[in-house]
Amino acid sequence: MKTRDGLKIERLIASNRLPRARTQKGTVFEKCGKLYIRFYQNTRKVTEFLCVVDGDHYRAKTRKGFQLSPAVDSLRAARMVAVNAAIAPAQETLIPDFWTNVYLKWAESEGLAQSTVLGYQKIWNSHLSAEFAGKTLAGYSTADGYAFLMWLRTEKNLGRHALAHVRNAASGIFTHAVTLGKIAVNPWHGLKQPRTPKPADTHAYSEGEAIAILNAISRPDAKLLFALCAFEGLRPSEAAGLDWSQVGREYLTVKSAVVSGVATGRLKNEGTQRDLLIIEPVKSLLIEWRAKCGGVTAGLLFTGRGGNPINSSSFAKHTIISDVQAAGLTWHGLYAGRRGCATRINELCGINAAFATLGNSYQVTAAKYVKPQQAASDAGLRSVSTGANHAAP
Image 1: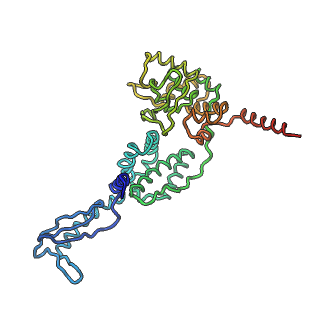
Image 2: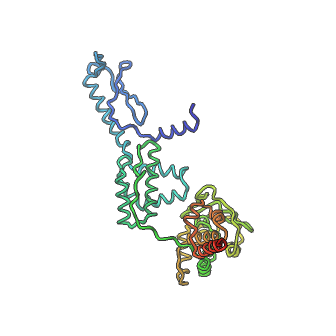
Image 3: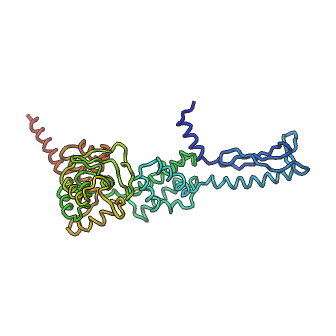
C-alpha cells in the first residue's frame, strides 16, 4: 500500500516527466461506422476522430490482422507527423526554460535557502545564462561542462571558490532534472574541476584593527553594523536582518536575515537561531542608535530608502569603506570582522565557544573562521616544554 507522500512524489514526477523518445505510428480502430486514431501525448493516451467509414475510407480484416485503405493510411500518417513533431521539442527541453519554469520555482517555494537561491540567480545572470542559451538538458555533456569551467578559469580569471560555486549551481539544475525524469544522468556529477592556484587566505581583524576601524567610521548605524559582525560574530545578513524586537536588555536573538537586500524571514541554516550576550561596544552603540531612531521597539535596525532592508555589501561600500581608507586603514570586508571575533573567542575560550557564537558547524567554524595565532602556538609549545622538563630525570 502506497503512503500519501509516496503517491504525491509519484504524481510530481509524472507531471514533470517527458514522453519517451519514440516515433509513433498511431493505432486506427473502428466504432459505430467511424474510424478513430489512438496515440500517446505527454504520457496520456489520446483518442481522436479520424473519418467516417465509406467506400474509400475503411479498415479491412486480413489474415495478418487489419489493413487500412490508402486514403485512411494517408490521414493517419498526416496526423501522426503533427503529433510526433509536437512531442519532439518536448523531448529536448531547453535549459533556460527548465531553469525559469521548473527549477527556480521549486527552489524559491521549498527547495533551497533564500540566500542560496539569490546566489544561484547571480551566477545564472553572470555566467550560466550565456552558457546554456539554446542548449538542451539532454544534449549537454560532461565535456561541455569541463570546457565551460576551463573557459571561466582562463578567460574570466575565476578562482577555485568561484568555479566551485558555478559548478554547484549548474549541477543543482541538472540534479533536479534527473529527479523529475527529464534526463537520466547529471553530466556535472563527477566532473573534475580544473586545477587552480590556491586562493589567498582570508583575513581576520585583530582586536586592534577592529577597534581602529570602528573609531574611523562616522555614521552611527554603520558603526553598529560593523560592531555586530566584529564583536558579536554575526553574519552580515544576520546583522542586516536584526529587528528591534529581537534586542533585549542583555541578549539579542538572531533568528532572521536579509540577503542582498531581500528579507528572507529565516536564517541560512536551520538550528542556527541563537541568543547572544550583548557586550561593549555593541551595547553603547545600540543605545545611541535606538535614541536616534526615536526609541523604537520594533522594525529593522537598518533600513534604506523607503524603509526597505539594506544590502549589507552596498551599505558598507557607501558608508564604511571611504572612512576606513581615509584613516589609512585596510578594509577586508564585514566577514573579516566575524572571522576576527571567532578567532579571539577560540583563543580565549576554545572552539566550543566560537561554535556557539557563530552558529556554524564545528567543521566550518574551525576551517573557515578560526585563524591560527602565533601567540597560541607559542603558548602551546611552552606548555609542552614545561611538561617535558617535569618528566625529565
